Length: 98
Image (tube, rainbow, N blue to C red; front, side):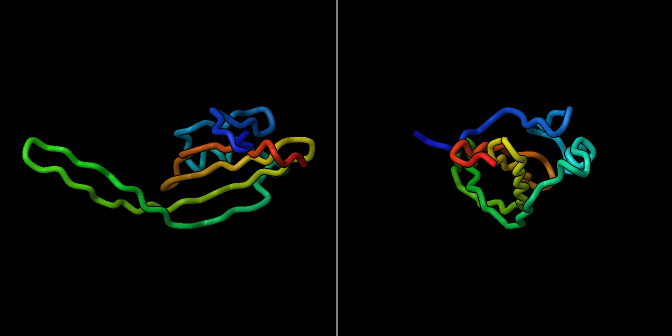
């Protein structure tokens, strides 16, 4: 059984963080006592497939990624992953409860 699950949203105090929100939106939604316990910055490359009538090719696009880890007492650890400043994924690790 996989302990990490993609989830649609994460409750930060009384507001929801969802895919597509900007870094500023998330920062405003989370009060100071709900700030992430860890922030990791990295680059990640994705293959992009291009198809036309005559040519098919793959290009590689590199994005600035940011992973915010929330560890609130009594909740599962949750990671909000940003791609170029926009929420790309929200992952909940159900094997770790704080």
